[in-house]
Length: 236
Image (cartoon, rainbow, N blue to C red; front, top):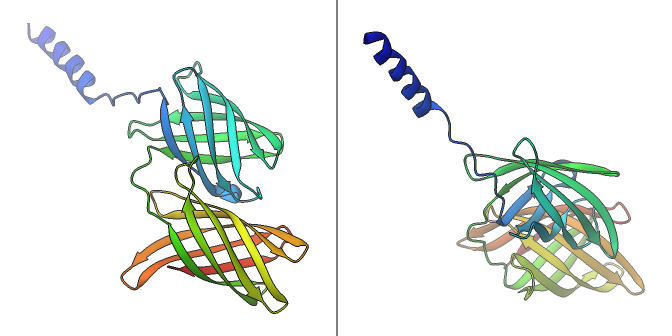
């Protein structure tokens, strides 16, 4: 009798102490932080029909990214997605393997013929607002530039802000346009094109958004397609 009771107690203890298995379904919208040299932010939606779509901005890809493809569950219970990321009409095929965690998040690795990135995903919480007029001091190759831009929420892409503005440099005035994406962790990535006369320079910057009593601020660093280093502080 005692032996049977002990065996039952051990089985019950094992069942209670075994960690709960993570939900393998990714259905829903995820805020995906890409890490390493392709640091950035993607918003990805996994649908019940096994399609996946998204958008975002990452380092080393000059321009606004859109993506589309399919997903499924592999033999290990991980999410496997195949999609194409498109920037300015050029597409790159990626394969993502994402391991769902008990915390309701995932960690993954996306690979392509030209490289890849590790990433982490979570359900997006409340996002800070970047709407309004921003004044910015920009340094390009150590030379100061001043610019003013307006950030307007995108009507098609949540978490994206369309920006338009103008600025002044030692060589004259310029215009700028592009997109900024912001995460619930107050991280920011920006894809901005600056046009100096007939010359347009495309840049990618990343940084943080901070809300202060004295005013809101974005601190960004990055580079443009001429390999010039950029650093910017924008205030609202």
